[in-house]
Image (cartoon, rainbow, N blue to C red; front, side):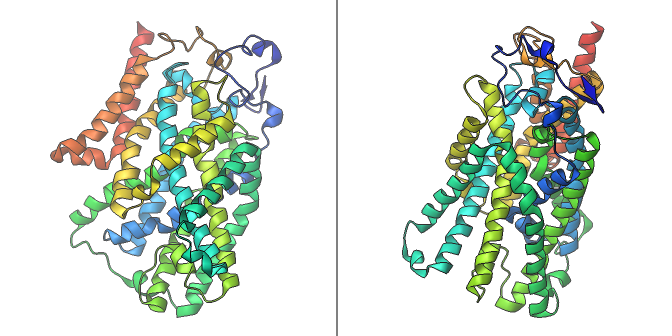
Length: 475
């Protein structure tokens, strides 16, 4: 069935796949009637995910590395415009066929092989879940301490706050994807308003945005700048390279291709640029007000005089962190883990697995310093995600010509069985992309390959997959 370029399996098509081991309710293609997300919902989704503490602090790492404010802002904006391209391309299949990311991956990796990209994506999401939960827990601990000063003397206060915030995330995991749509739609305008309130406070307090906006770049030559800019740009692409893969998890609920495309374009790059600028401007004001640059908004808010202002501000930060965590770091791994064993692992169980692994990955170490965060975490995992994106886009647009046999995506021994459920050609392409990107860590003269990790991995995997698949077709 097709409606406005959206396809739906009719009952006669699915009668023989209900008993398949490759399907459950959460992984099944959505019906046309279930595709209710419009342009505002996708814009709100990205506003809710982008307005978070890591975005606020993103420019700090770039400025600490030597950029001035506009160079940092330009790098962030450019990175998000670039990542929007694979985001919209991968979103197409989700909108057209109503399928999530791990199911789409079956067309290129095989019905069983799809677990390889799904698990790689899922593990990265677990790391991000831990990071956001740790940040949210610290914000909650500060809020409780301000309201009840005696809490600060409780030696386990920070750990207890972390657990409380972790449980808040678990609540929305149990409630499912519709609760995420509700949470994002409600929170988006509130979060943007709080950002502008913070910006207005900074300007009113000092009459200008202070030294950081006037601070020159620390790079003495253009060569020094480019040496720092290239890996930084890769890191900015890596920031949302995760969602560029699993965006079908959300666009499977879209009313139309236009809704998801326009909504994402409106919601992602502008919000990332705006909230990063708010972080830069407010931090510049703290130098004048407090005599030091305070990049951590939780620390900044604790210095305010009014308990009411502190409380409302910290609540907004908690909402921002919660909306980002649930949408960006739970939906994908929940579906990815479900894809491992659909009959036993549903969305909720997959989400709970994510929540546990997120703690085990010790997020506090990933946030130890800007170089570990940008050049270790963001670029490191982009070397795995870039090749996956290249393979998915090549397969869907060039090999399949945007045509999928949705029924066979849920069956063994069908069109996407390849060899015992694995398409070894996609595995070869993925391995080649990762190898070339990471070899720069081992051979100093090839460091540029790692600095460009996402781009290098994407191109290598895209080209090799195309060659291997076309050779098969000719044979």
